[in-house]
Length: 447
Image (tube, rainbow, N blue to C red; front, side, top):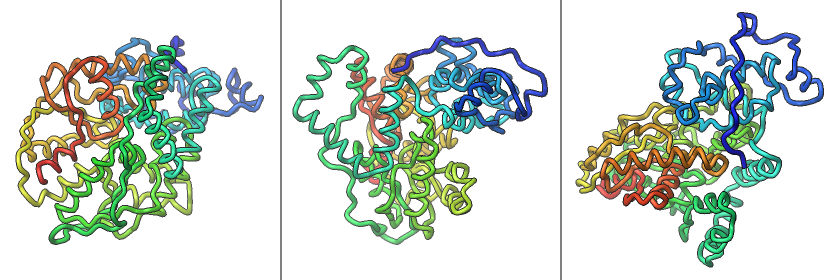
């Protein structure tokens, strides 16, 4: 498994010629390409970065390491150097993969640099991270499991059996410390997955809208109760809910970890599976919503899907975003808890949805106590906490200290990765809080 790399110095800024796509560049990268290694393409978004440094204090890895190569502008510079032929792509892999892809830099950037697109395009050249065994495991998960709901259910069933029989607990006692920490992150698998009673669920009362619902892979397997709550809230608020039977994982992990081709195939399957005659495609997982809102970009070069993917992406709404847009039909009963809210990175920074969750918490009568730096990454970042456990643990410790300081009874985090990471953090650092999805509280309030 990879750890925090020893950062190389970021090369001095070259002249204006390096700002254009390279022609006939020489150097280590050019030699590697001649030997058959993949080339780093020119990524147009690079040109928008002015290297001002306003992103640095917002970047989790820069705040921890204080190394320029572990900052957004440093990584952009490394990608630029690789594209210009002055660095071999493999030489920048550790720096690109220490990044959490939280996109806090995009919120801070005055030039509107789309860092996520740059990093994903570079990682598509690099492939999955780490030494050969880790790369093989990650590639198996991304290619063999994520595109197949059937295989994902089987894998979850194996994990549940290991938990129920005590095999996982035994393994945690005998594994080396690094693997023991990763095993402790394993989510508890409930006895059933999300299984709606029908593909089309009618609105309760007068119909106000027709929506499609992404049930998701992690949400369906590990948080089926949250999916049930989301569907109930949507129906109570006048939504006819379609849960497409042919849907698959959104492809977010694949895009983040260098499997762009598989991500595009999964996006096509979802574009085919979801009906066109809906007012919105509702998602209750922040990372999934951000990925699906990017389908238009992901499939922009596919003549058969580009237009359809753009229409699909334009309809995607986070569940909180949609409910505020639609307006709650009834006045919810107050939920008498003190809560703090963790902004999922891909909701706050990726989708720019911040006010809507807080408005819904207020509507549910929840007393909200804001934590310090609520939009800083908790260290989950998909499978980052498995691949970069040291950095993830550092960020999680910081997050749990912020939670403890609020005195909250509940941490609200509308994203499965955040929920799993924060549950582990509460156990790991002894913080007495319950971790809940916002839809849980809305459902409890009768919204």
